Amino acid sequence: TIEYERHRLTRAQADAQVLKNARDSAEVVETAFCTFVLSRIAGEIASILDGLPLSVQRRFPELENRHVDFLKRDIIKAMNKAAALDELIPGLLSEYIEQSG
Image (tube, rainbow, N blue to C red; front, side, top):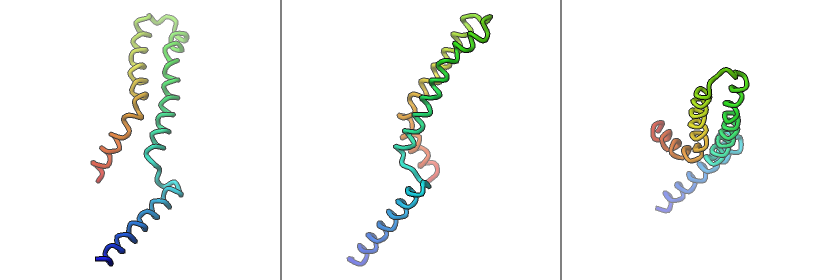
């Protein structure tokens, strides 16, 4: 009925306003923003990790190359994980919604 359609429209408008107010007060943010921020932070962390083997090698010159190479391999794994963060977020969001809903 037309009355029901008006009710649905009013309800949708109210929901949209609640969401807008929550976004304006920074109670909620868009997924794209989260992806941007986390990717930026991951990049900064990757930059720090990248310099770690050289820092360790300078600080502990007695370490053998195999120790530093081991460190490099694990750091590369962590950096690759961080670099893929922007691709992982949508799937993780879906998983979160599925588990919390």
